[in-house]
Amino acid sequence: MHLLSLSFAAALLFSQIVTGNPVKTRTNEVTDDTSPNVVNVTASYTYKLIFDYDNRNNSAPFSHDYKLVETGKYASQTFNQAVMSEAKKQNTAASIKFDADTSYGPASASVSSEISMSNEMSKFLEQTTKLQKETSDGYEWTNTTHYEVGPKSRAVLYQRVFECPGMLFQEKAGLVSRQEPFPKEQLVEKVNVTLVMKPQQFIKNLTLTLANQVVYGDRETDMPPNRVRDMSGQRDDLNLGMGGKYVWLVPEYTNKVSEALTIFDFAITDKADSRYKDLAAGAGGKFRYLLPARHDANKDMFVTELTLVRANKDVSADLSATNMVWKGLPQGHTIDMNEGRGGTYLYLVWQLQRAHTIPK
Image 1 (cartoon, rainbow, N blue to C red):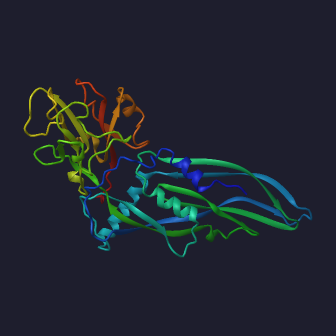
Image 2 (cartoon, rainbow, N blue to C red):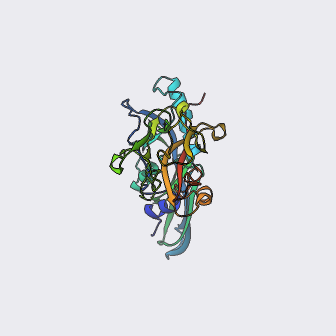
Image 3 (tube, rainbow, N blue to C red):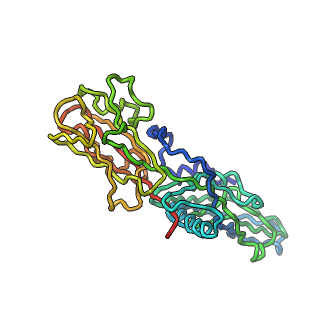
């Protein structure tokens, strides 16, 4: 019997996820030496009846073609809300301790050891719990399969379906053939999903005041290793081709939602502002300032990743309409930071992730 393989299912289910993403710059992450919190969520395995062919009154075999329809779905918001609600209960019971100003996400997931779980299901659970897309993912796949029931016999076929809040998955290895139907009380098995929770990392600041988060250099070899990179591997000097100083951005990270940024504004002005570092330092012309900010319109959505996009044409419409950097994930971008001074088009692009904190 040919069923949907995990690799193909994952490709369908997560076709919008960027793989091999080259733009992460995590050198300045907040280190967390505390033991990770563990949250237990109740899920279930349900045995879904595919067919029941009773051929016990016949002396000849019975052949039949049937359609097996598989579906799978994952809604990260529903899943994470359920996890954090359960975390609140366990936090109240003092079995674990969560910081109210910290957003948490699953680092790993496993099912009760007494439950037999296929490698396919294990990988699905591990992958999906780490996804933070705003939209639901799903797939449906139909396969016509031939089945033969012998003379004087009966064949009952079930498929095992895993369900928990925001998640449904029908296992490839979950087909169970029996000679009699399951007793009603055995059609549903409650299972315990154990989630290891880790604090989420957000961009705290690019501290464009007198701190060193905008780094100047006199030569390209001065580039800091933890700088924001160009998504396609091009040079990441913000003053490239303009003369003056080499200029790089260096992010700072935080676990605290109250310190996290939601957006970056960009200003081009004739007047110097001593509060900020000029991104066009030494190049002459107008002053260019990047302004980290928190806007109420982006409630619960905070910056987690940064990259530069350099292009030979205006791609701002593509950045807005197609989410060309992180497919399927919320993101924002500046205007062309080289506007009015020639050279390539240059944008700072940021990924946004929803914060999941303990409900009040």
